[in-house]
Amino acid sequence: MEELILQLKEQLISELNLEEITPEEIDTEAPLFGDEGLGLDSIDALEIILILERNYGIKIENPAEGKEIFYSVGTLARYIDANRK
Image (tube, rainbow, N blue to C red):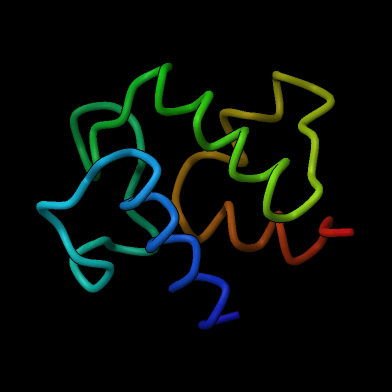
């Protein structure tokens, strides 16, 4: 799981052009969106959806689940771990 979390942090940094931060600076349980944590927006959410589809074969079928799944790197990692193909 630790390896998956690190991999996810690296993918987020790369795909979302967050070069000014390191994986170690991303709190695993901090919110990804809003004023706290990384402060990502809806465009970033689309990029995360692409990361899930491309790298883990996961499609988010129910958009209502997205808010819960995308809360933090930790929630993303747990969802990927439970659902990857």
